[in-house]
Amino acid sequence: MTEALRENLLHGQVAVVTGGGTGIGKIIARDLASHGARVVIASRNLERLEATAAELRALGGSVKAAACDISDPAQVKTLANAVLAEHGRADILVNNAAANFIWPSEKMTPVRWRKVIDIVLNGTFYCSLEFGSGMLAQSSGSIVNIVAAYAWTGAPGLAPSASAKAGVMALTRTLGAEWAGRGVRVNAIAPGPIDVPQTRERLWPTEEMRRKVLAGTPLGRFGSEEDVSALVLFLSSELGRNITGEVITTDGGQSLGRGALDMLGEIQKLRRKPAPASA
Image 1 (cartoon, one colour):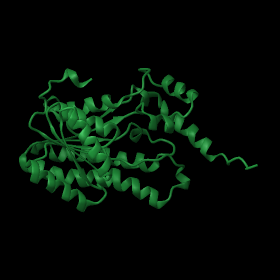
Image 2 (tube, rainbow, N blue to C red; image 1 turned 30 degrees about the vertical axis):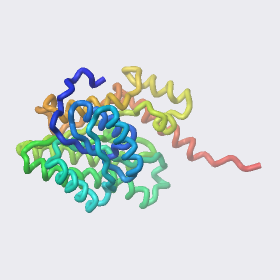
Image 3 (cartoon, rainbow, N blue to C red; image 1 turned 30 degrees about the horizontal axis):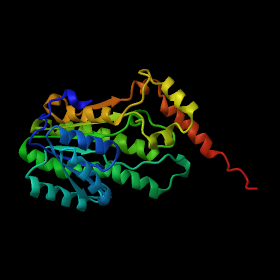
Image 4 (spheres, helix red, strand yellow; image 1 turned 90 degrees about the vertical axis):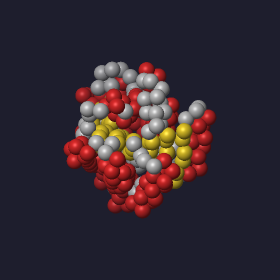
């Protein structure tokens, strides 16, 4: 999908992708590298990161792995210092790492709540602060935060994630305004449901639910990881040079009619039903 963009679009730039070992983060890292960026992928699972980095290097990209728990500001500082020591700069930061689960709000525990907030909201802030400081010093840089379409509307069973991602939206606008005059752009992408096995299991576990979700999506298709990655390339490159503080939704128009968000309510009803008695 990103083949329409020139191969050297990001030549010479250094990009950091959190949560880069799997899923959307892996595809973002692949596409940044294929367009000339030197990429560092970071997450807690170093073994998985190393495997992904090796896979992407085999495709011709410059990709290295670095272990980091972004909910720990000390580890984020260590990561930023390591990137600076090896590459001398960071031009692009993609805050993609996330934590999420579908759970009724009345059953939410403080531990579950803090886990999501610490990674999604606090981790995004810590990374933006550490890498953004370097970008401000060099008077250039682009930060792209990956949020979710349900952060606009809320969604049943997603109180911690919706709240955290809504906070990231506010942070995006705030930093976008605060740093615009100093050469650093900050934007966010809000995807709708991405058609991958994990999402199918969580949001449309039955074929009937899948049909209902599609019926509530004006474009009649689910999103893909490549849809998100293409927007990252656009926003992080010179193509997006006049955009900052924006949150771009890519959900096939689903948020217009809520689509999968209504299905979350149905899933919650199923989870509240008492388990059948054992024989």
